[in-house]
Length: 168
Image (cartoon, rainbow, N blue to C red; front, top):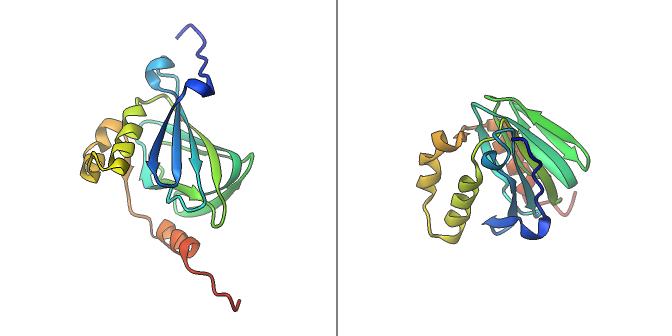
């Protein structure tokens, strides 16, 4: 790519991949000459975020624009605050959701770029009921999105969604 790419917020495609989250598509591999893929995730406090997964061919970066993000990084769960950056190398399990009681606005980028926009469009179709979750599972190789189990993430999310004891 030997030219700059400018994406105006007013014209960026925004998808709803669940009742509590938006994905704004910024730059896909095809528009960046393979350099990167970028999107913005706007997650309300009740958003489930993304389940544990890894990418075999790309590093994924999370930069918290606003709010707090809870993230799985390998076997550890960390909380990122506004301005924090997490860079996850290929092959490392990770997941993310708003921290308990918080919302999160996050810039997400992959390097090298991967054609991911159709994956996000598939998630929206699942949310809208025009596609089945089995299609997401079947697309793992195509979109380099490999789901895994994480006891640490399950425990953290269970604690995040557990009813609060008013006597404590």
